[in-house]
Length: 395
Image 1 (cartoon, rainbow, N blue to C red):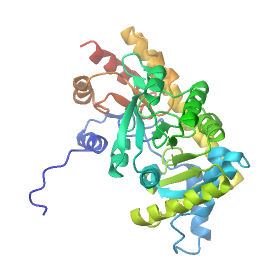
Image 2: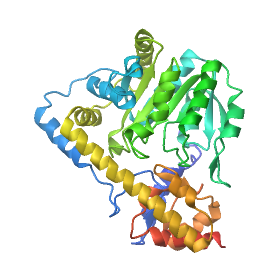
Image 3: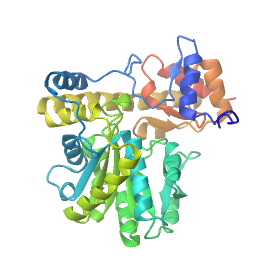
């Protein structure tokens, strides 16, 4: 059964990690893997996380099973974080804990396939490379709509809306809630309103992937589009992740939140999600979710988290500005789009051969698509990285 298997294709991100590990140069720069690094190149554990873990160690009395829906306190705090306590969307929502944002997407994907078996899923081009794989694993037909043009470094909203005119009532529209991966180009509120009007008229479903909340402009600012959709539409599905904004990557902390036209409708959607969970992983791991729940419910820890999150966000945006300025100075080209974009990623618009030169000659590691993780930059390497990018662009 196994002896005649062909070598599987290498995952581009995992392959990049292996390539980075093989590079013995002490000045190598990791701009590929989507992890936040601080000014010293470390991927630190947040202080608020350490404090919450100490509290858990001292107070947690059992490791018994919870439920397929996971940690109830975590689910409540997730709804509060997404929609605000006491809001209409909060009242009309129910959440369940999942193994990371990817787990939330897979549960949503399987649920949609059960509820709308003939429906297609519209995904942006470009998008997170794992989106197609997760959705296809559930058997969905995918339609790619234009979202971002690398040549002009602009969000192609007109072309996007032209493509979305083909949405049918059984279809689902996938949107990035903020900090679009891989482009960093986000919708503005007027564009969110236009999309909401279209979807409301079509009767289509909406799935929002919210993996970087708080790393763009702030918690409220980054959730503004999501909250607008929730107020304008009777139904909504949200896949959210705490990997990046709590730096809890390996703990796999995510949530699937359903919004219904009524509280009863949300409860029913939640109930229909549980059998999906049971056949996928039965119950999610609790440790990371318990950490997040503790931080979000404790006033002092919550303030500490928001302060640490602000440091991460401000550092990323500062690196964007420095990279854009240095690239412009060294190349004479306009790179201001990098400074305007938000989140961890941007696309340089360079070819795979140029990427290979950056890797081999400059020990700068990024994906073959030219996407970089801006959070891998710091004041010690940003000028060298910018100079190398400008140099390969002149070849």
